[in-house]
Image 1 (cartoon, rainbow, N blue to C red):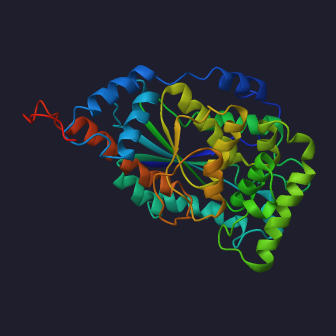
Image 2 (image 1 turned 180 degrees about the horizontal axis):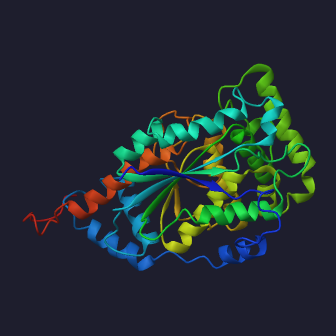
Image 3 (image 1 turned 120 degrees about the vertical axis):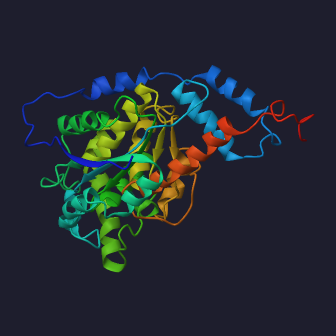
Amino acid sequence: MNDSSSGNGANGSNGAGRREGPDFAEIRKIIADFPAPDVDAVLQTRAREATLTKPPGALGRLEEITEWVAMWQGRTPPNVTHARVAVFAGNHGVAARGVSAMPSAVTGPLVPNINAGGAAINQLTELADADLRVYEMALDEPTADFTQGPALSEEDAARAIAYGMMSVEAGVELMAFGEMGIGNTTSAAALCHALYGGAAADWVGPGTGVTGDAFAAKVAAVEAGVAANADLLGDPLQVLRALGGHEIAAIAGGIIAARLAGVPVLLDGYTCTAAAAVLHAVDEHAIDHCMVGHLSAEPAHRALCEKLDKVPLLALAMRLGEGSGAALAIQVVRAALACHTGMATFESAGVSGKAN
């Protein structure tokens, strides 16, 4: 099911004067009215789990995953026949400050490489039996440099959220979100610094491999960005548009749409989790339908996961982006569901008495 395709996202200047999708007020209302988890589906799943030929709890987090999928799909048995990896690509104006080891021009050529099947995410998606969609978000028009003011207008941020919502289509039963774009870990660090405080250096990591003066420039850019947008930091959605990017806003939109559609979500690394953190800041239950696919090598990702009370499924020291860790985690989800639906019960196996 490895079917990669790309699309061009709406951007600010090309979309000036157009009204597309919800504005921030409508987005807040959507989040406030999010559907609740299906408790009955969890109870039914738990009841079957207790009959399977194994000691109670012997499959550890695989049992938790099964309940999570049932809870948010609202059905038993839970099942994933159609998984999708959605990767959003965007560029950041702050990259001009030398915060990355690579220039923004690198992002564009990487998209055709994915479309040609040559990236790591292609291999991981194919192994996961998932389809792959890559969405280009105004790569020729980076966000504004957030050290000088907001990265995006409210209209552009809302439009990017609405665009991301379109990635969750009918028939998809599990979404894995990822991103790519030079400067996005600087943006993620600024978002986290704005949402959680502390020192800017607490949230900054090497990203593409910066050290020395480039690392210092990255820390300084995060500090300057939060200071320059201080008047917007009381509202998480305003934080998103002040310090985020097209692709980060689109991931937030995808997470919103997945909740509305009853689709559980796997998050990729630091930047993707930072997009989810914005929604968590709006409502602490807004990302209950999300699991973190892997713990990134970016140092602050661990701290962010702790803030969100999320324990990543994998820890393989990956820092590629592209949705690679989330795609790999799809196989863990499939393994959990296979055990739940395929294992015999004590009764069907003719085993007298459950194991202790």
